[in-house]
Image 1 (cartoon, helix red, strand yellow):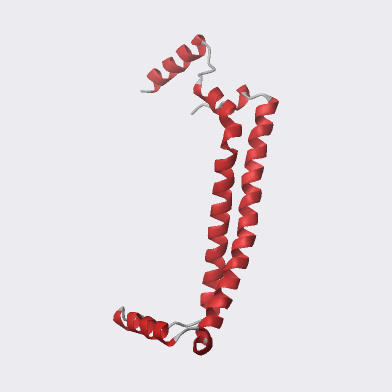
Image 2: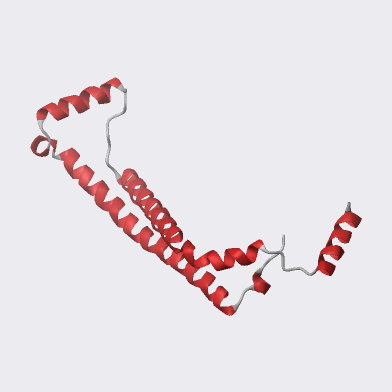
Length: 138
């Protein structure tokens, strides 16, 4: 595989570095937001579950209980394991979503670099030498 790094101008290298930096920065921001959201989601779910007498109407509780029994699910438990799961899942989702979104939003800055990668920068002599080496190895 050939690299086109030697064919990039300083401006193109700067553009690639900026896009890469933006994606990483957004990924870490998403991680922080996701960890926070996962913790808040777990605490809110636990609060609602523990205070169903006040917050949830009786008909909704009966439907939930009926579906829960039909699916033969174990009772819901909120403990440190579910909190850890919620926090880490929130962090993973947040990091993925923000990094992906930033990458898709920044791809327009990379079009010039993609064009450089389309063209073969080798001279005819370099192509001939490389083809001869490949035939020799076979």
